[in-house]
Image 1: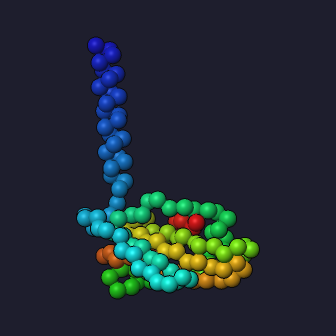
Image 2: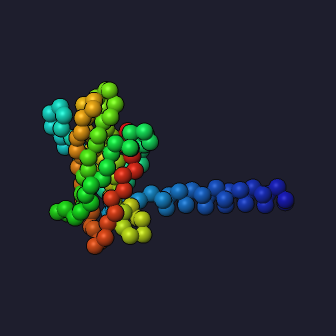
Image 3: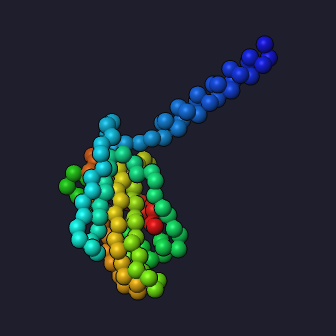
Length: 146
């Protein structure tokens, strides 16, 4: 009987952990949508936006020192963030940037990803936007630089 109680308790713990993890998944709407990609020729940014939270991203601390967010503002149908990149290395680098758009309570409302190729020793810019129902206050959080 004692072993059976431990098994039931273990199952209850695993089930509640599964529910907690499922509750952490977030979308800005009830229905996840496919990502949207746009881009152009070499040297131009390629943007990817999604109503689901982009959860897989690279964050290289040494690259973040050259990336600055300079603007976080409302855009038609959502919000946008932009900034500058300074590549202080001796090699060209294709920067991958991921931004979360959050409300005042840090709930993720949307996310976006962009890439920008910056030549060695040069400066560049980046811009992302996401479509979601935005409250009056939105924070643009640069969560990944790779």
